[in-house]
Every structure is written in structure tokens, then in C-alpha cells.
Image 1 (cartoon, rainbow, N blue to C red):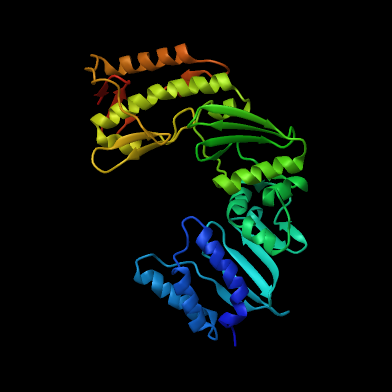
Image 2 (image 1 turned 90 degrees about the vertical axis):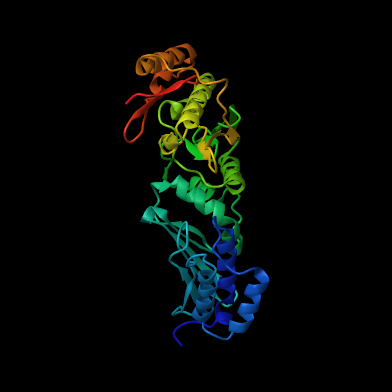
Length: 363
């Protein structure tokens, strides 16, 4: 027999199922009761037979081809399940009977690799390990995998890397979690947090590395992984330096920009794909579609105030004058808002100049 029967792989299969249902979006699997009935039916058949039944279930409902495990026997005894197509990162999990042997997680490079066993965590490299990778591993895999091996690590994978002095790649040193932006400083044991939706800056200090790591781990488990995509311009520098005055200046300028973008969208719905992803203060720019598109900033609709005014004779000149004047007037702290003044929106065959009060095609 080349592959394990389902009953021989039942323990790693249960871990796979838990991870599959927890990932975002979840792997398409039948409801728990229906899956239990299938497991009973296939208990004494090869694991691949159950996988084919589940694949047919998902494809028959138009849910796509689910990433399902492939099983094999280990030379020293035990069973390994490997899931090559699992997202965000493929993994392999091995058991001998009811005893877990190892959990392997790997991404694009050796920097995105770690192994967990009862001895602890082995990192693929001891320097340059990306923090966003570890945060994703902490958010999805750690809550299930670490207890499986009896590891009590309140800081998760990232906390263990910090404790052991593993070299980390913090990207631009400012990380994003939805509308929350973080600057963790492991040397100073401090954390700067900017909530872009609320416009609130907070600073936290920690008595030791363990408490610092546990705080980041709790943030990741509660709010999801950390990313490096940020608004362009002086924003990251302002978060990095805890420049509250500068961040509030970015926010005031962003409020005007949101009004301007809403004015554009109300006049030219075809401009939708050309709106920026972020406002300069870190708030997301999204569009509510279905009928006339509506601008959402921080989850709230932005409605242009008052009726649209007629554009000036030279809209391009008026556009630059308006935004430069606002930037000079609102700049504060260490932020020079001239760095974030907008350009006309460049549509395929024309450009669009705008302010909160008017919008005009400029050819």
C-alpha cells in the first residue's frame, strides 16, 4: 500500500480540517455533520478517495478546486500529510499514531520557512525573516499548531524570533493591519499605533521583550496579519516618529481630498479605477458599487457638500493653485503637505482636474 488509509491519517487530517476552515477565505468543505458522514464511509479506504469525493463536492457546487492533502508513510513510521496548494503558505504535518512529529511551513524562499516540533521552532534562516510572513503564520497557524506540540509561546512565532534574536525584516518599519498602522520598536520596547479611521495616535511601552512580543501576537490573533503596503509620501515617516501634529495635518488634507474624489466620482463614474488606494493619512479609499458608485473612506460614505460649482476658465491652473494653497496652509509638525498634493486623474483619453467644489475635464 503506497498511501495511508483515512483511519491511519485521521489525526493529521483533523488538524488540516481545522486550518482549512480557519483560513480566509476558508477552503470549501462540506458542513461538519456531512463531512463526518463521509469520513465514516471512507474510514478504511485510501485518503485520496476521500479527497476525490471532497473535490467533486466542491466542483459540483461551483466552489473551485480545494487544496486537499496528499498522504504518505514515513520511513521511520508515521504518516505525513502535505498540502502544496494551501494558502497563504503550503504546509506538511506528520504524526506517529496520536503523537505529532513535525509541522513544516514554507513560502516563496527559505526566509519563509519554519518547522515546529516538540523541541521548539526551527527557522529556515536566522536573519532576514520577513515580519509579515511571521504575522500571517501567527494569525492562522500558531493558535492551532503551537498547543499541538505543547509549546507555550505567548508571543507566537514572531515573539519566539524576537526572544532568540533571529534577524527580522521589518520592511519599511511601519506595518499595516487594516486601518491600523504600527511601528514596533523591539530595541526601545515600544509600539506606536495610528488608527487611521479614528485619527488617533497611541504610544505603548513595555517592561520586557516577552510582554512586547505578547502584545504584538495578541494584535495579530485578534486583528489579522500585518502588511507592508502603505500610502506614499510622508505618512510612514510621521508614524515612525510618532508625529501626531503631522498625522493630523495629513488627516485634514485627506478630508479635502476625499471631498474632491467624491466630486469626481459623482460626475464621471468611469474615473473609479483611477482613484488612489489610500488617502495620505492612511485611510482606505473604496467604492460602493451597484447603481451610481459612491465613495467610502474609513467605511463611511463621502458625499460632496453643496451643489457643484461651475469650473473656472483655466481648471488646471485653478486645480494646482487650490491644492498648493491648502497644503501650505495645513502643513504642520514634520509634514510638508506639498509632498502629497494630487495630480489630475489621468483617464485613458483625458485628465480630470477637481477640488471639493468643482470638477472639469482638461483634455
